[in-house]
Image (cartoon, rainbow over all chains, first blue to last red):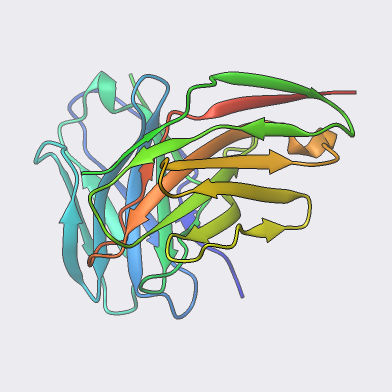
Length: 111
Length: 115
């Protein structure tokens, strides 16, 4: 089985721009979660989707949004980028009540 | 709310020796899962081991084993016969069973393996 894939792997944006990150889960997994990893804050939960519905959301501003498609692929969007949004964004997929498997991440740099 | 604490920011071990990484957690859920993930310099988060809280038996995966003390809310990871490839950040994480896949992570422990 192919693992979780994330595109793009690297992104450089400037303040004020917006960005969309994509995640394709392991085949058969319907749950997708997103995490932000920074040196200062560590790993923080962004949101979780299951069957195209957001089931849980972390404590992030409304500039962070996401969605899930009928094929379980998910996207997250960050609008009006700030310098502090520079981070590694990790996507994970799972079957319900099972282990989450992570993708390689997208490294976002905001200049 | 769940919290996970890793009190050792860094640890080192000699190749072929044994090392134990500590983790404590707090949760109000009656049933939950605990995990250790490894993140090497490539940044890919890799599952090391998983423990269901309702199971009294400690989980084991080859050279990796846990010491799960439910009453003490402690979940340490033991790595036996350490190898150079074990060098990485190790994260302890918890997940409740109440309708969310959300993982709560500790701050991580950086493990160095000396040849």
